[in-house]
Image (cartoon, rainbow, N blue to C red; front, top):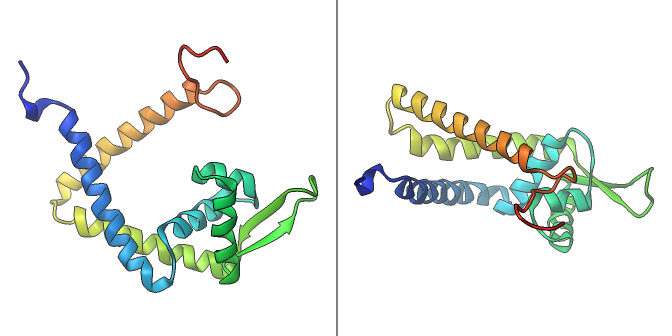
Length: 164
């Protein structure tokens, strides 16, 4: 019989609790920038896209409804962090991309988030941090591979056993 400590269940709970602590710390440190966590996430997604994103694609990547994405983009555009343009391919589509000021803000956001993580993980010794990083990368890689296998060709996760 396995002990509660050998079960994977408490690992997930503890991981979620630590992630929440990091998010709360990062949120407090993002506040002086005048950004909500949702706006910071949108900036990160836009900066890493490599090209302007359609509003619908941004909403999908943020996993929010398009109306909410519009509100986030409205706020970021008002601050000069993103710009909108019409799509040359589809006149109905609006493209969004970060401005140079927005890219600089993304660098500040990254530094804040990394600092929030460091505030938690720097409590570990160097060898423990390296091992934790190795394990998290391993899990991330394996899950990413599984997700790509589970996709049904439309870019959406398959629902096993469903009759699509």
